[in-house]
Amino acid sequence: MPDLDRDWRAAADVYRQRLLSMCWWTAFAGYVAGGLALARLLELAGVSEAWMDTLAMVAWLPLGASAWWLKNRLEDWAVRL
Image (cartoon, rainbow, N blue to C red; front, side, top):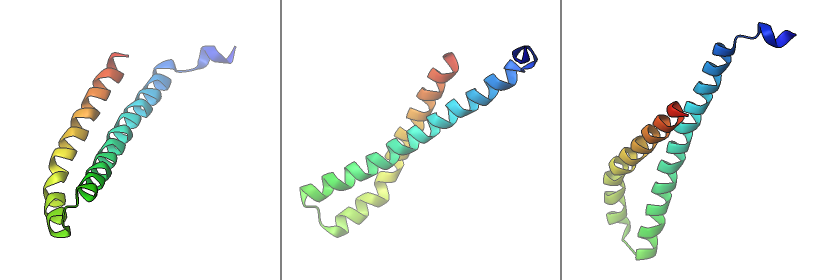
């Protein structure tokens, strides 16, 4: 019975770290998708390149804050799992 020798706490820690890593990558994907969606929306709205550059300099902060919020919510959910 090799399963009796397994360190289940170590295995749980490894899987918890993997789950938290998935939370981070999901939030990062949301950040990138939000930026791309905003760029597409501005492009469809016909915003000039000068204004688009100006908005891009400002838009990273709310996008980053929403990604950080999403990461924290996902991690809270993952810890309660």
